[in-house]
Structure formats: structure tokens, C-alpha cells
Image 1 (cartoon, rainbow, N blue to C red):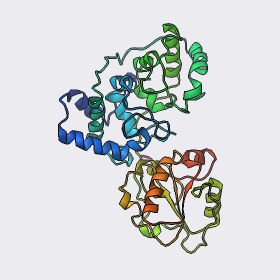
Image 2 (image 1 turned 30 degrees about the horizontal axis):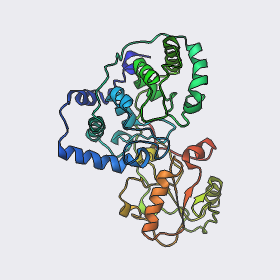
Image 3 (image 1 turned 135 degrees about the vertical axis):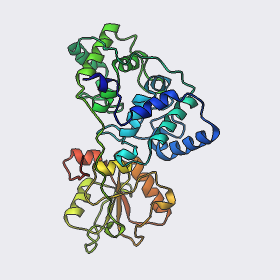
Image 4 (image 1 turned 30 degrees about the vertical axis):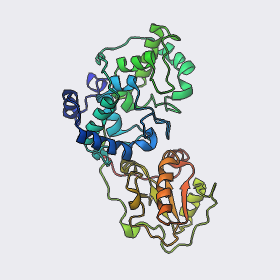
Length: 354
């Protein structure tokens, strides 16, 4: 992997990140207030109102001194801007079709660091840590796979096989996390369990999984027009069997699509996620839209409205709750979420990539 990728210096963001590093003056009251609003609107659903994490989707703590002191600004910028593939963490950058511009992402990151009064740890981002990748593979399976997944796909902890993570996490960053853990998360320090050479081997194994990465913003496509929100407008009403009065199995939604039943599909993830991949015919209705706008352009005539997210329920539950407050009935949530939907081989579509 090139030093360019190892350092995570993205062509699209180099100037942005340099500006973040240079701007060390404290945020003023107006900036703090704006950052707090942004956090509550876009981040709190999963990371919690108090940033302690694990509100949904195993989203980690954003209070962790270990993460903030080593991940700010470059690693955290790419995470927020471009997301993590095959996880519920989508890209929030306008480049990806998300709601935040670069200045807003910079503001959020500075606010997180200042709020926790973090002192940055100087890491050698160009250092290459030598280790035995084969030994690291065995140690990873023994100590890491139960949380991070046998293939690094992430289970209750971040995906360590994600190309974007490995491209933007230097060796020193990975080693620091293993040695020191992540306070405020289940990620404990392994300094007492593994020798220094063994930790180096785990880092070497993780690095061996890197395949290179660069941001690939999609060619943004127009969402359905309001007159096209209702699928199969001349079709019959679907017959859904709901668990707990809300959750509909993916198989029943597939059957409703195949039988050309009349209903509406809402994708409640960030708009960037809809651009990247969505169930055919779904309308983007991001969870961060104001509650009184949840029914915008949606008929309130008893037409079934089925929502989904990746979680599989946090964002979709949030939107459905808002719709019910507005008096909508016949609402449901796809029980499995789109990540499982995709893994099941069910149909998805996406915007064209550049």
C-alpha cells in the first residue's frame, strides 16, 4: 500500500484536514451551539445523547479519550465523511449524497475533541510495524474475532477488514488501540495479555488484509418524485403479518413486491446510503429529517408504509414513530434491515458510480 493511502491523505480532503489541524483556537459559543445541534440531529440516534455510544448498532463511544486523541482529525474525518462499507455507518458528506458539508464535519470533530478536553497523542503515521502476520492471524482468531468478526466484518465492534479503515489507520494507530484499549467501550487493553512482539504481529496481520481504498462518490441520482412514492398504485392492499404489531418479515415484503401490491417503501438511512444501495422503489426518508416533516408528500389515506434501515430497527423505528404521531396508520418496519436483506440475495439497486 502506498504511503499516500497509509497516511489517509485523500485528494478530496487534504486541504480540509490540514485546515482542521491548523485551527487550534477554541470554538466560540455560537459554534458550540451549532455543533450540538448537528450532533443531536445526525449522531445521537446511534451514539447516544451523551456520546457514550451503544444506543444502536453497537455504535462506539465518542467520548473515548483513546479514540479522540489518536483518531482526530484524519481517521475520524474519513469515517464520518465516507462511512464504513457493509455497516450501518454511512457517509455523511455531501459528496456521498449525505447532509453535511466539509465545514460541518470539521466543526463536529473539533467539538467532540474540545468537549472531552482531549490532548492529542503524537503518533508516527509513517512508521511500519514489523511482525509475523501468520502469528497475528492466529492471535486475532483467539482474541479479536469474537467482537470484530472472523473475517474482520465487525459484530459488536468495528469492522477491521474495512478497506477505508485500513487505508486511513496507520500502523501506530492500530497498535495504540490494541495496547491501550478504547476507554468507554468494551475494547480492553491487551498490554497484559499479549507481548509487544505479539501485538506487532496482530498489526501486521491486519495490515496484510488491506486492499487499497479511495473515496468513490456515486453519481447522484434523483429520488422518486412524490407522484411515484406509491408502488403499484392500482394494486391490491398487501397482507402483512406483523411481529409486535410493527415488524414485517422481509419475505412478506418481497412477496408484496412480486404480487405488485400497493404500498410505500421508505429508506430511513442517511440519504447517501440510499444513493449507494436501496430496495427498488424505496423513497429516501432519512431519520434526521425533522419529525413534523416525516410525512412530507406521503398520503395519509391508509396506504401501507413500510420502512427499513440497516440497524435493523433504530432509524426505521424513529421514522415510523414520527409518522404515527402524525396520525398515520398501517405502518411497518422490515424486521431484518437492508444489510440482512442484501445478504439474503434479495433485490437492491443503486446510483451509477463515477
